[in-house]
Image (tube, rainbow, N blue to C red; front, side, top):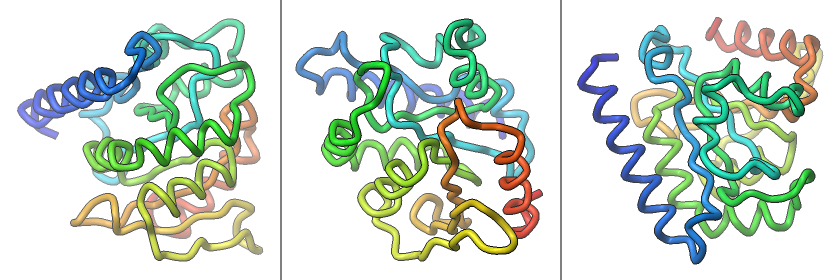
Length: 204
């Protein structure tokens, strides 16, 4: 990825976040998300750009990018320290919530911002999207944000995870979408299951 492309991505992302925040009745409620480390993102080889899609930031207020760039959290280490190891983060619900995300509120926010969420995902041209939170997040992404027709590959003898390939994200390539558990449950067994899918789809 060229330096010009990275700078353009920075500008586009900043403009999108500013526009999105301005649309909120209470802009102070808006949590910025996106690429955590541009240098690492730019250095990733082709086929390895990953977007992680989560419900919301729970009680965190402010920039999720800034929070993760400083290493995550000592208190909620299972969630955020796992996320901090990944490169790019998007939340369906941009406004902070409580310790436990309300499925109704997440779905309502995602429906309201479906067009913006799709634009943000497409901005990064990801090779892989990991949806944290099992069915809720992955179903919202498939059915309402991307409006995909592709069918999920169900858990079988090869893998315990659901996945499919979307043609709605990038015009020049298919994007692998994998339904994962919440990051605080990202145990080694799920990492191994993800590895199986990456091998099976020729992405490892």
